[in-house]
Image (cartoon, rainbow, N blue to C red):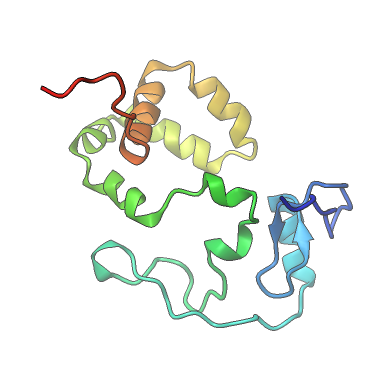
Length: 153
């Protein structure tokens, strides 16, 4: 396991979890990323072919975007990463699709997406049964429960 690095923007010791895809400078948060991005003048290390979304459509990322998820994840973050194949299963789930028809759930998800402090908001929303049902459904799809203590018939 790699020792945490100090943030190259704010200097917070051991807080840098991300790195710039252009110059590999370490930073710790979205605000530090934005600050660094304004100052960074390095050329991108590599240009990638645009990734394809499900169904072969081009990824909705900005054209010519020189970074990918691999560029911002550290080795420590890799264990939390959900493989693309499992994420595609979310789009195929009828149960999940049914839950997302609920306007209240959609509003909760938009609020989380737009929030500065997502962690606190998620803690609050995990008290709401509809949000818990949504989270459980997603987890059941990407991390199916182990079939333990089941005897073959």
